[in-house]
Image (cartoon, rainbow, N blue to C red; front, side, top):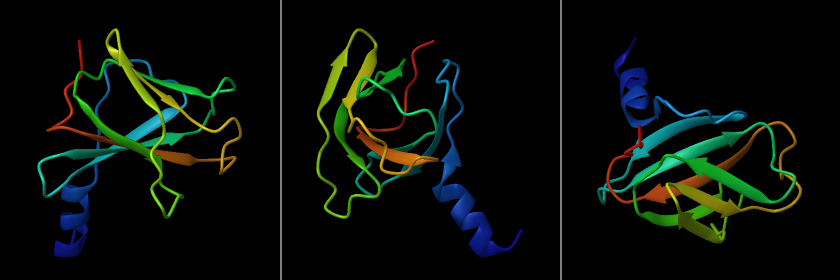
Length: 111
């Protein structure tokens, strides 16, 4: 692995998940301000427009669609050990829509 590949691997790491996030794959990036960006690759779009992210205990900063160049905030509720992001009814990408969650600090999952 060359130096450029190693740097990319350190910036975007797969997030190990203990929880069952069926249809969602997660990568993360530590941001310069100490926050963490979680990239939720959603393969099975929620039909009710509610994307549940169980077991994440960090304080939420922002959620938005990666495809949205304006990074318009999506409504988020943090309750009972989960984050619920209100997303459009139709997935912007029918195969892999990416929802970005910016959280305070490093990702901490409830066990």
